[in-house]
Length: 381
Image (tube, rainbow, N blue to C red; front, side, top):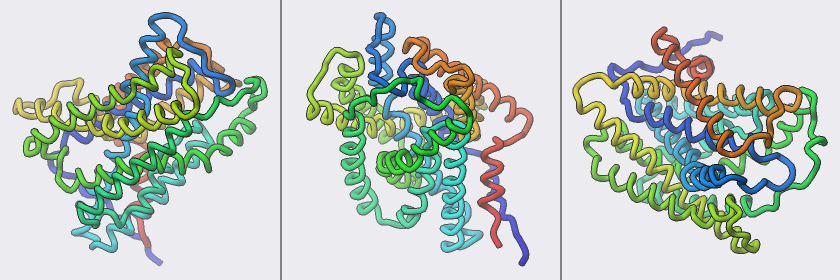
């Protein structure tokens, strides 16, 4: 049996907006993950102490928590359309869908290794599961696509809102595994819980991303400027207003009962979908402004786009940093910092990945995770 490898085509001009959105989105992901440095895994999360910590916590709740992941999911759905569009003329409809399923299967394996080796809060496997289940959605009519997305948004908001309302597990942090093997097994135990939870939360924006990808909203932002402007303004505003009740909870300004806590969490999650889409639309408008000048993007935009082109590698690189900082047999900084300091560390980690990605761009090297996934997914017997 012979083995043939199909390489994805390289476009003459790569659209700036999708890569710029992915690179920027990774800053939001880093800020969301950085909060583990300020909150222990076991025991109730401490209320922000200083005025600065309280303000930072409020800003993170309003503009970061449950806002970055929907944007990432929408971009993933958008990318599925890009892959289908580029490969269908070569492989046909059946071959292109088979390629997407093979890629999704490898993403699940990447996610499993990610959890086992580095970090419990994986999203790669969840997106792989969704890609396997929803590859047929690439051919759904618009009405069905958006109707299912709306239903998935309701389910995701209720499920994740209920999770946010769960009481924090109480225990002694000293009971956590302190050796590499025990820690890996502890992370692996969370895998069957985290994957379906993140998949339920991400289904709605992924479907909307498919809808947007069909219309080339980010690849041709000049044709959709009015729509992008409306989504950016309304989406970010809705996200900020909808997060206010949950922000009162996270800053300890309000201690509601269980019913109100679920409602606040569900509202926070539902409006987070709007915020994630709003962020993507805003980046599309920024990319339009940059490309209208008729010159190449500046060094900052170029570096962010390089990070976006290597988004999976940069995402995994962040997890390497969290592994080194959080594992009890290494730095062991879980819950050791204030929320403002933790956020600064998160942004610092993201900036390092941006610089490294730009150096890789200048050297003409792809991200290692992307190169490996491409090698595995684009080979067929």
